[in-house]
Image 1 (spheres, one colour):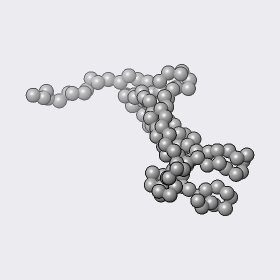
Image 2: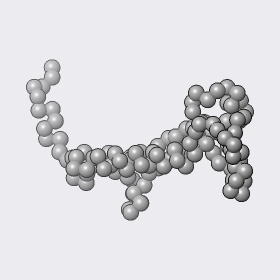
Image 3: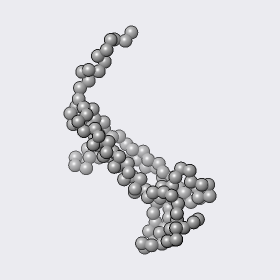
Image 4: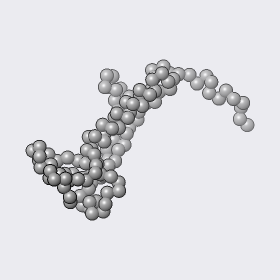
Length: 120
């Protein structure tokens, strides 16, 4: 396996923590975009599955880190060195501990839904 000169692998990938943080940030962005909209969505369970490569860093006390590898990683890397991990996240509102909502607190109205001609 090639290294980048510092003893660490040059495999393209991101740390597992960064992948999970990206999902969190995108949910927060979605909530911000929904501000002022009359319909809210409760965020249900988020099922995540990644192919990981575990690597021990030479620097920093020999910590082991999990790196998310690209789906197209070449076969020589995939044989015996990668692991699949799957988990489910349950988003919670940090302030209330309840389910997290994406949208405005106003319950909205369906008064104008189906206002067209009745269907046969």
